[in-house]
Amino acid sequence: MASNQELLSVLLMIITVSLLFSQPRQIHLLKMCNFAQIYQLGDSISDTGNLIRETPIGAASPFARLPYGETFFNNATGRCSNGLLMIDFFALEAGLPFLNPYKNIDANFKHGVNFAVAGSTALSTHILEKKGISSPVTNSSLDLQLEWMHTYFNSICYNHRDCVEKLKNSLFMVGEIGGNDYNYALFQGKSFDEVKSMVHDVVGAIKNAVRKVIHYGAVRVIVPGNFPIGCLPIYLTGFKTNNSAAYDKYHCLKGLNELSMYHNDHVQKAIKDLKKEYPNTVIVYGDYYNAFQWLFHNAPRLRFGVASLQKACCGIGGEYNFNITRMCGAPEVPVCVDPRRHISWDGVHLTQEAYKIMARRLLHDIFPQLQCLV
Ligand SMILES: *[C@@H]1O[C@H](CO)[C@@H](O)[C@H](O)[C@H]1NC(C)=O
Ligand SMILES: *[C@@H]1O[C@H](CO)[C@@H](O)[C@H](O)[C@H]1NC(C)=O
Ligand SMILES: *[C@@H]1O[C@H](CO)[C@@H](O)[C@H](O)[C@H]1NC(C)=O
Ligand SMILES: *[C@@H]1O[C@H](CO)[C@@H](O)[C@H](O)[C@H]1NC(C)=O
Image 1 (cartoon, rainbow, N blue to C red):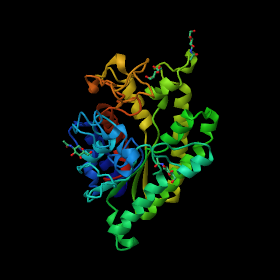
Image 2: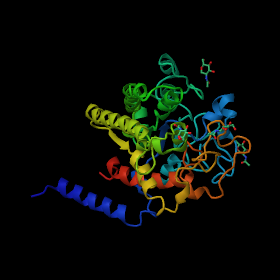
Image 3: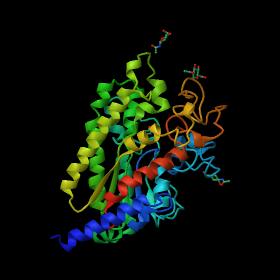
């Protein structure tokens, strides 16, 4: 006979499943977790305004100007999109306000802090330099973001015990991060094999970051993987080839997608190890790769323009509406009329519409694993 415990978990499963399938668009699943705060580490996939505040280089970047932000804020916020990012949709779903960037010293951090910096890497600038790779946009890599986080927690907690108590209802996002490490290496002429040989160290840095946030007091951590980068205009343009065997049936570059999968396999293996190391912590993989693939493969049904699936909305030239020397935000670079029908915003980052759909897809996968109802 089933124990009460088993009955209870079956009941909770039924509740979860029925909530998941009943009117998914109206239900804010993440609200059931009652998260008080979200803390984000990462790069341009989640930066809500750090890069444009941290240095003159950041302030001069196109992310500080329209057309970035044209759709949602009608102003540039430092988000690398026409509007909201996945982390904004996660916050909305959790019933929380948008996360303020750490570098906004006037901001309210009651509901969390966003430490992500566009252009940042998982490996420190110094380590990348030793591999012959330069980090052109920012030096605020994952280790530095963790230091900011540590400084911040020291400022709000009396001691470690207090921090553990304060953070028990928080959600931690460790990534996406690492995409730029490979991006810089690839565009600075490293071979695929050389880039592949970086995966061990990149994922090692991510794994250590998860350990650190757990030591600060995190009990729920999401660790996202990388996108299928071979489907993005920047890579399709940069690695364009006449060899048709290099493309899959969706016209994505197989070798680059394999690199992402290789990274993602390592991330999932790292999560498996971490779960053994920290059995009382909930650590969930954020499957950005498959969420993107799902979006991409279902794009016509999701009302994206079929002819523009791999064309940047904001950009110019070539097969993918992308030219690395004339990117979105540069003079006279046009913006598409309806960003809602595009997946790619600027050839590197996605549109608000694409991020919204990906975020919903991801939450349905992640929410049950967060174990908020048990
Ligand atoms: C636009 O954003 C900048 C900071 O990025 C801010 O200084 C400015 O006041 C904003 N303008 C409007 C009209 O909201
Ligand atoms: C990174 O740090 C180096 C050395 O301190 C400095 O020269 C460089 O300008 C920094 N890069 C950026 C993008 O801030
Ligand atoms: C592809 O083929 C065309 C015509 O055969 C040639 O002009 C072009 O240089 C080739 N491009 C690459 C990237 O190999
Ligand atoms: C990219 O833009 C530069 C500068 O306008 C131009 O010289 C170059 O031919 C363009 N490249 C492609 C692939 O369109």
